[in-house]
Length: 168
Image (cartoon, rainbow, N blue to C red; front, top):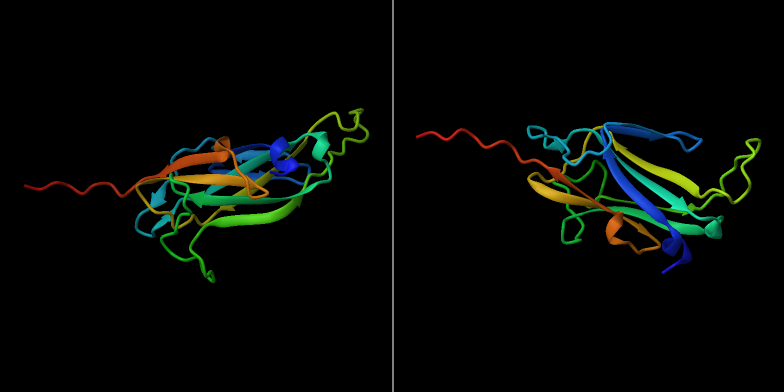
């Protein structure tokens, strides 16, 4: 386990809409979703955002780390989307990149250096929805340097189409 992993604090939340600005401020509408709606005719979810908030203490300022978010089932296996994304070869939903823990810059505000943690937000906004499998609990899981913790997972539900009428 890396030092960045050991010292990280990670939280995940689903929202109807979210964006983080250049100053690191997070704007969120409809935060705290647990059920992601689905258009059963088109086979895709409604638009939603996944927000991953990362906090790091001064001991790891300027350290690089690999960050990853994967869509999994409740057993921890990657979920196959019901349709392959346009131009994509894989139907597994995974986002990853190398990031750096940047020291916060509060110059001119009287905040002493290294007094506050580094905080950043990774916002994934799926404005056209995703072809998520219906009737299942799915899990977004965050990883740092390939490792994760149980609390770095966010379960949510995608409803199945309503049952048809019973005749007879």
